Length: 390
Figure 1 (cartoon, rainbow, N blue to C red):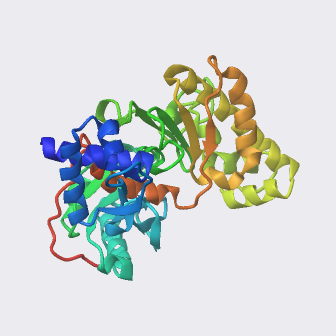
Figure 2 (spheres, rainbow, N blue to C red):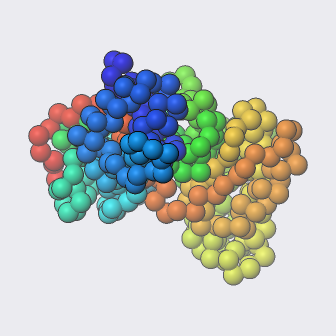
């Protein structure tokens, strides 16, 4: 146990601080110089750490920096969308090597697992996967997820309840599987390698088909009871307001999610219901109705994110999700509304504009155990070979 802990302490410090000498690692981790030397030698032997440049010295043996060999292993991240599965093969820093997108005709659990397994097979055809060991597969799902068991407790949208996705996928692939809420995965990636890399407390807010927040407190994902933390889309935003997918009235999600925005735009005469992409294009072209719809939604988001900021006092807030396509027309009003409502001052707010934020987050589910000794173990692989979808 202590050996594994020492390894992860060293790797986590190298992740946070970049190349460091062994003496610097001893100070940063609190380990003895001998323990650091032993750990780094072991990691170098496994190809996970490499020696870098020699540092200036005042005599005797000059210190040599060591750093993580992020390219030494690969991981796979999968993200379930409404009508497709997205996949990415990454290195240990979640840097994408190749991607895949497969259509999903029916969102039944068996079909989802079938398409996920096929996506894994496609990704492993990449030359970068053949030369390096695969450490695991992360799957990001909407809904309330029990990350300990990889079970979807419930998802209103598809009518799922207690679906053991990790067990189901692990039966079809040759690598351990991690399953978690997709926004928790997004928050984890931001903490490990994104805007929150040097922070301990972070809130990641994602707006897309749904609205949710991922929360990191003292360097650990906070999931709450049965994985239900962060469901801000179901905060009451308008008493007796619009009907939400969950069956309640007035939820935030009923006003600012992708389907809600497209519906509101259609109702105001700006376009046909369900045309999220058209709404983004219209706003970019300066259409006054589209701009007004997005500004109203952005301000509503800002008011609720301010409540989160006042409650958690995070070091940083990261925003993302499919709503990034709406650009400043949506996020600009959100920030303008947020700033004056933060009691102790608005923390830094970053918008992640990257298209692959979802899948990279899912990949981070598998990668995190390299850096965090308290991370949840993946569901063990049960299949020697990958299955193909019909």
